[in-house]
Figure 1 (cartoon, rainbow, N blue to C red):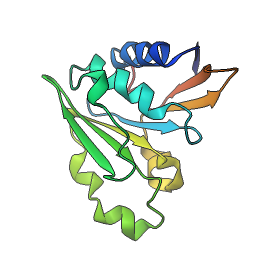
Figure 2 (cartoon, rainbow, N blue to C red; figure 1 turned 60 degrees about the vertical axis):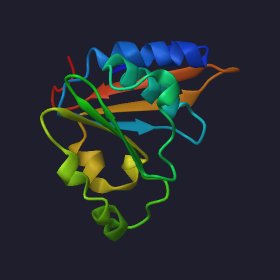
Figure 3 (cartoon, rainbow, N blue to C red; figure 1 turned 180 degrees about the vertical axis):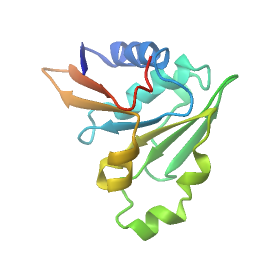
Length: 146
């Protein structure tokens, strides 16, 4: 496990860009943290790091559930399962169809479902720190992070 600390949204975005260089295509990445912890802010940096989206165009998929960002080498799916409560609701999203060697799934609230807790390649936990600070714990799984 690696840990990082940021003190602003800009630093969190920069951390996301750095992590993008280590995430391999085909990965499932769980983003864990309370509401407002910075999951979407980190996703902005990851999407920008893959040249899949400009930081300012990345928004929370809380109401749309899935945002797709296409880069030159990878398609990034930013998924928010906060409003999904049952396996049946999850199945209607057909997330299995999004898994592929040139895709990355960034899943917020994926820990709600056992399958994602088990099948993830990387987990990034975010905790509030003093002021705008955040602590990040990055746990690789199945050797899918460089």
